[in-house]
Length: 107
Length: 281
Image (cartoon, rainbow over all chains, first blue to last red; front, side, top):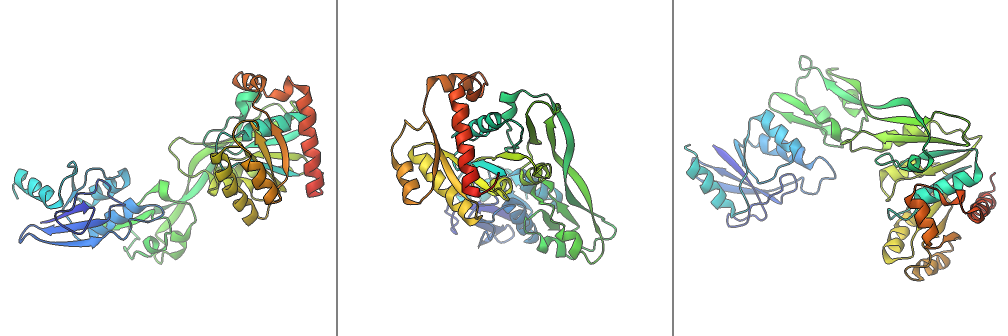
């Protein structure tokens, strides 16, 4: 399974970013081997529609779960159609959020 | 002559100047282009009639014909279309109605349908001197410009036209003031007033609209607005003092020229200045 976390920096110790469409980085974690990779959000400065573009991007990369505390309504609607589960946690360290999700959900 | 009344900063007195100028002249068309919150009629209290709905054309995608080629998604400058593995999703409120998606679709899968985003209203009675037109954008709709464009199709250039613009310097303001023969910029003599005035001046210069300044509540704040105007050769058309009588009338919804006839003369003087500055009548 692939988890996407919105983060403020490209470091698993970095804080989660409460914004979705305009977050700075996405951390993708593959739960099979717990390998992670960071990608810079290409839409963080889009003039409009950052949320839907970012959502399409996250869906294209095959995420099953998104951890983000406050995604906008358009992004939520794309996630819903793409079948991506949205998990809203308060701000914490990025990898902590992944552990918390895995700890509370039997995968 | 088309006179636009604009300002960078909000709440400086655009509607005050528009209304008092309109009522001083009589027999004018007044367009309330602040379609997110039109307020001229709070003062005029005309009975209004609906003229029409304003629609923008938005795409509908046929799932049978669409082969998910993504050309529409790529061409959309406003990110209103999103491709998902099994479908294209459309976000109506991001769509500017440009029609590019239906033009590029090789499958002919996209057709356009009108979507109402607001209405246009006008004074029901034609005998009240000031003929008011106002646009009203539906609540939660983000795009004001199509309403303003639709509103301006009702301009009758055989009359004097006063356009009460929305505040700021963004798209709705550009839509409102484009085509004006003169733009009256209303400001207040404060640092905020000056800052936003200078942005508005850059805009009207870019649009090549002759312009001058009205300083409202001219006896508050400092001298910097006047210094800015003289340094930049921008005429100061009128100064309105921070007077309790004017404020009281405003709070009762009464344009002050109706009860302070000396001001009617001053607005007529300003209009004559505009006629001279533009060479129009």
